[in-house]
Amino acid sequence: MSFRSRSHDERGATAVLVALLMVPLIGFAALAVDIAAVYSERQQLQNGADAAALAIAHDCAKGLPNCSAYQVTADDLTTANYDEAGSVQGAATVDLDLAAQEVTVTNPGTQGHWFAPVLGEDSTTVSASATVQWGNPGSGTAVLPLAFSKCAFDAVTGGGAPTGDMPVTVTLPKKADDGCTGSSGNPMPGAFAWLLTDPDVCRATTDIDETVASDPGNSVPDECTNEYFQNLLGKTVLLPIYEDVSGTGAGAEYTISGYAAFTITGYDFASKYTSSPAPDCGGPGSSGRCIAGFFTEYVDSSGEFTPDPAAPDLGATTVRLIA
Image 1 (spheres, rainbow, N blue to C red):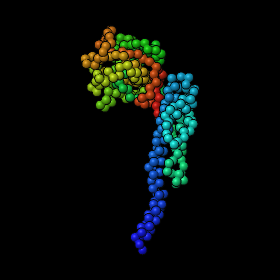
Image 2: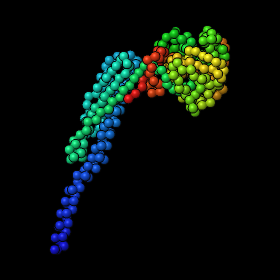
Image 3: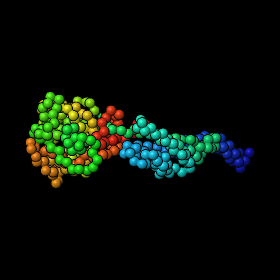
Image 4: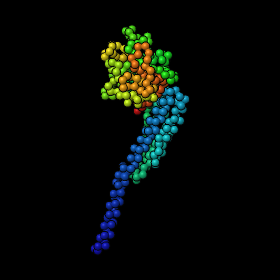
């Protein structure tokens, strides 16, 4: 047999081998490309479902007219969060339960394939859903380890939920002089109190009806810095409200009854912990320590707080992604 004949035979064998390997090669390409596209599709669908569910919950928590137009909100946000080549987005569905204060958005789509059709798979149906609850916060982590007196809150808001932005300066007096009393009938020790912080952070995690320890004395907790406080200026935060106090000094404990939203405009916690400009902390019994701002209506979407049907309405509402 000549060299030319042997070469021709080898080319034929190579062609057969390549033909045999094409199917598994395409299968590997399908795994690498098409499955990756499915994951990308699912992530975009999830982003849209999350955004839509959070927006609808926010509208319903605030009592906005958009709450009843939830389908429009869902369609707008699922579409805005979707840009996947080679795919088709389905119509989002919304399950809204106003009584349970819960909404679920399901966002479907179909991802077309580049290589998998050789294996008989033209496309994959993909779906993502998100469930969000809303309501008055019943537990959570406050970014400021500070609790306000319910008596002081009532005095400022007239005993109800705040409706505006009336400025207020809440002081830490040496002794209460506002007629507020604890369970013993003795004056409450101050309109606000520092709480024992979570480990190594300037935050405090609490729960309604929970009795929490205070940080002894009038001084700022060691975990907090003036730079940290400065970053909170102009921001609205949820803070625990205490309604009863037991013990004194280092043994003082506070019973948390709810959470209120407070926009911080200034503070003077003495020494190096002072905003610029500092608020006027004067007044009968003042120790020169105070925080200024206003109680306000606010919907928190930080995810740090959990809704609780038993929690009182003090103007703050929280929305939380639960699934």
